[in-house]
Amino acid sequence: MIRDAHDAAERLLSWYDHNRRDLPWRAKPGEEADPYRVWLSEIMLQQTTVPAAAPYFRAFTERWPTVHDLAAAPLDDLLVAWAGLGYYARARNLYKCAQVVANELGGRFPDAEERLLELPGIGAYTAAAIASIAFGRKATVVDGNVERVVARVFAVEEPLPNVKPKLRALAGTITPDERPGDYAQAMMDLGATVCTPRKPKCMLCPWAEWCDARAAGIQEDLPRKVAKADKPTRRGVAYWLLNPEGAVLLRRRAEEGLLGGMTEVPSTDWTAMAPDEAALRRAAPLEANWRRLPGTVRHTFSHFHLELGVVAAKAGDGWRRAEGIWVPVDRLGGQALPSVMMKVVRHALAHA
Image 1 (cartoon, rainbow, N blue to C red):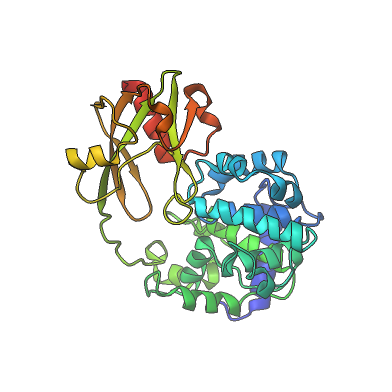
Image 2: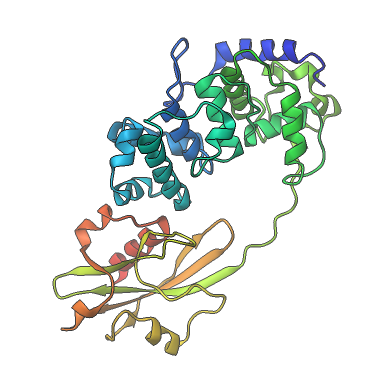
């Protein structure tokens, strides 16, 4: 167990100075961190790995190098650029936050946690990360990597997620006043590169001698997690409809709820039971000679599995009555289609 927080911080920061990761959003040694880049990266990393987020971050910052640029962009452009990162509510909140910062705060992010928490899409972790990394404020920054380090150092055996408040409190006891931004990033790097989920590299750890889990031989068992319940499966059918000009019908989902505001291939509701023929006729965007395509589109969301059948048809003379937008097939890449709908598009193109 760490008994001298100052000594522990010094040792970790020394390790970090020699082993820090080179990340596209991270300021170089001696450089001042850019709050916009810190904020953007933290939003992207909320549910995404570093390797997955890095190319998106580079693309965003090349296209929208400042918060003013991002705030002035059309929302649909941002959603298209976000496609593949998932959790589109984060993208919409990113856009709202950029507009608040650019239009109401003069392009300057607040430097205090409590004020950062007032911005759309910024929760406790993100506020602490921005305050410490971008502004050098002392803050307790706890992501999944930090939770793992703290659980092992203090041998906390209660399972996640209920133990999160305890882990945060313990992390707070060893958070230093000096170099808080570097310390926060050092903790993240330690968890990502040394104190890894499997086969941690304890011999390389600057805190190995203080780690209670290592002393007890249970480091690979921590942090414990409550067993997850099996995800239910929902089912539906998507409608691939082409007009006489070769364009496909798309529509925008409601702003609230799953994939809110995103563009989709029209579909039935997603329910436990697959829709019957009557339900298929009711949900169809137009009366047409629908034929079922072979195979099934499968996708997994955070809380359920989805299985979609696909039916295809060519619209007749009344195609303009359909609710939605008609998009040429070769321009589908410019639409804000979430990953599940891109799977539907690929399936339809392969089998229609």
